[in-house]
Length: 446
Ligand code: GLC
Image 1: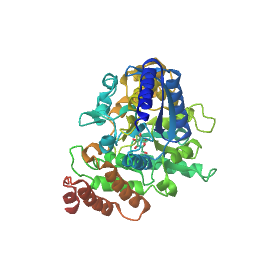
Image 2: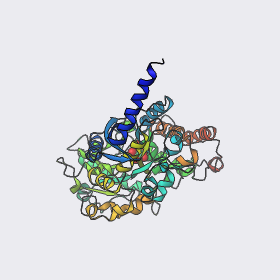
Image 3: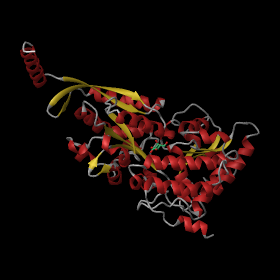
Image 4: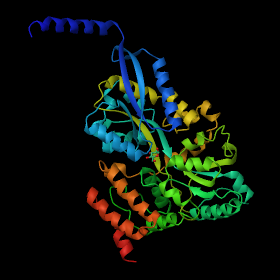
């Protein structure tokens, strides 16, 4: 033992003096989704950061390598994978994409970005509501990368051909248009359908079903004040309406669709309407297929009834840094880079994700691009309906699972909407311990 001591001492001296004068190498791993488009964009971001090497971080110079790890595309599966990492306290991924609904559930495993250089100033650039969403007990656990909102895509050429003046304003109008156009188009194209959306039992279905329910005036599952409000007449009517689309204006298989399944059918020219997020637009720009930005319009989703309010679910992703990372300083620096003004602008232009920095909506480069319409829809994005992740944290993921499972049963016809939502109300009470907002009495007293 004794003989080793001087050797260890020497090694320490050597590495200390080296770090004071030379660059250190660091590798950080960034977990992204796995669509071809998002992976390609992530590689471009990583490359731009590496092109700017060396980075001075906390007074040290680093030569950084950013590696991309592709995670599952489904938010529900990605959440499960993160939990595995965190439970094992694994630093497998240093930088993680965090869905807008996860800060409250995952806060304990994420670094407080405010403790690092530049984060406070950077946070001031973003929409305050999203920063507030990402702040848990005063700790900023994610820097916004982009926001998201559900939209209605429609085939403007077909609407015109069949004599409709414009996109539907209510779900009933959408049904009528979809039916008429489907009947006509099926003569030549047996694969043609009316309306594609996300009906698989996963987080995407929570987003779709929240839009139906909110647009019928049926609330937001659990209110932001923390009252369970999912069991009410409007919510029941909304789910019954959507269940009626399955196998009629929507394919039977819609109950197994995620975003990309719907998107592929729509871009192949096999549907009139699609519910999707803004990213889907980027795959229509310069597209070679039958469907391009030339014959597609994008607008707000329909309202439950005439004079009702349309609803878009609020989505979006943040960059968070794992507490178990062995390179936290470097990972935070990269997260700040990837969420900066220029990077958000590139994101908007290349993959059509909505910026969270308001000034970008007025940037000439955006206004002269195919997504100049982002600026027109800014009020829609800013009034998007939040899922109840804050009032139910840290159990939102379980709340959402109970909700999408109940909704999926209704879509599959295994249960009716009233039974499913009544049972869900009990499940949510047990899961969250939150009070019921009187919905049970409303229905029971009819
Ligand atoms: C989008 C949204 C995200 C949502 C997910 C559901 O990625 O940005 O918030 O949870 O879709 O599929």
